[in-house]
Image (cartoon, rainbow over all chains, first blue to last red; front, side):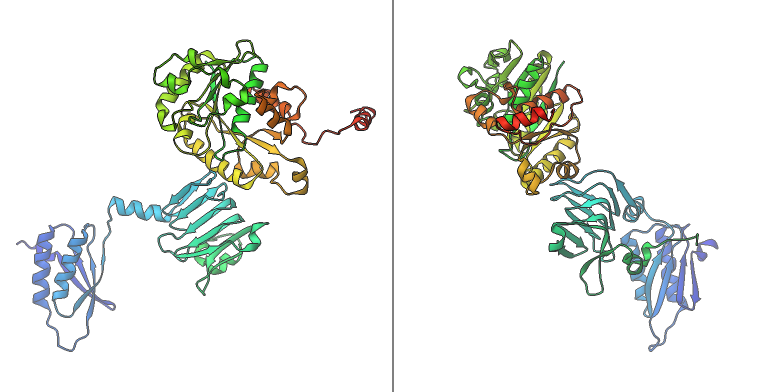
Amino acid sequence: MNKRSQQNVLIKGTKDGLTLHLDDGCSFSELIRELETKLSLNYRFQENDPLLAVKVHIGNRYLTEAQKEEIKELIRKKKKLVVDEIVSNVMTYDEAKQWKDENQIETVAKVIRSGQVFEVPGDLLLIGDVNPGGKVVAGGNVYIMGTLKGIAHAGAHGNSRAVIAASVMKPSQLRISELVSHAPEEYTNEGHGMECAFIDNDEHIVVEKLHVLKKQRPNLNRLEGGL
Amino acid sequence: MGEAIVITSGKGGVGKTTTSANLGTSLAILGKRVCLVDTDIGLRNLDVVMGLENRIIYDLVDVIDGRCKIHQALVKDKRFDDLLYLLPAAQTSDKTAVNPEQMKKLIGELKQDYDYVIIDCPAGIEQGFKNAIAGADKAVVVTTPETSAVRDADRIIGLIEKEDHIESPKLVINRIRNHMLKNGEMLDIDEITTHLSIDLLGIVADDDQVIKASNQGEPIALDPNNRASIAYRNIARRILGESVPLNPLEDQPKGFMAKLKKIFAGQ
């Protein structure tokens, strides 16, 4: 044991609770050992003390789910501590890719024809029509520069804040998250120009003029600069 | 080296076989060497429409299975001097007797000898369809102004667009009834082309003579005055690369007085 290894675990008190800084230069087993000794040494709790939330900063170390669980378990064993979150500066390539996929707009120029299903993990910008019998599915929002005559499913993985917007709305079915809405009768003849669909406060899918979206989903409004 | 054009539609009864027969005939009239291939194995019709039924000796399955050479199975149309041939489908087998690889090879061999190989596709999207498109370079999708036919055409176009060896398909709208179009009881041509978003190759009016001619085994394209015949000939010319305007759909004025009026009107 040298001097430096004693610095692998730093405990700091903040107004939100305790923060554990775990150094990323040592091995995991070394870290666990030191955490164990440090926690058992320094703290004595009164029986009626409230639970203390602990934030764990692990710097540039990547922990697997099992290792995270091990640390949580270790801290939980010290009576009055509970892990609030584990903060890391790094993530795996797969996680990063998934995160990117779910947050980017995928642009495609094609006609989705009867029998075709087009799926994207994030937002979809379709330059073309969705014909009857065709289907587009997006993890995020669906924007269609063309006529939507088939099925559009936004927020397919459970995002109920997702919206569907189309230049011409004549859908046979709209789906947002778990909700499904069938085509109202009025669409059978004439489509309406530039509309959007979203889930309102009563948990129904509503179709509205495009400008309503600004109020309903402020997160889509990123206008900066100008007047 | 010629090119192979598959005539397809998805839905049955919209006029694939009629279109194949008349397109082949029209191309032969324009002086091209044409081979018609019927891939509707088990339900062959093209030979009947062409009036060549009685002269079939071997068929497509015989060629594929090696029971005869290609030229032995080809039925020559005597109305054209050495320009138009038919490779008939087998009537006693079914679609599974052939696979897409074999079809590709067969069509490839035919393309050596002919300017155009016209492939008549069966209805549906199963094995028969896959066989028919396997060797094709181009595709013509036939539809009628009915919602169900347009829906199926849309599906078929989607499937063809996935095939890299086939150019973007072209559209033929068949059996248009002018009076229903005028009343708005039928999908109009613009509506169909925007919906399917592919190039329009031609429109063919619904004409009783077409059925009569098919029953007699004389493709309507042989009649130089019929409007459906003119439509098919125009489609053939467009395939050859000519730019031909769409033919008008107006019903021809009937009777002596009407003709007289037309003459005086200077039309």
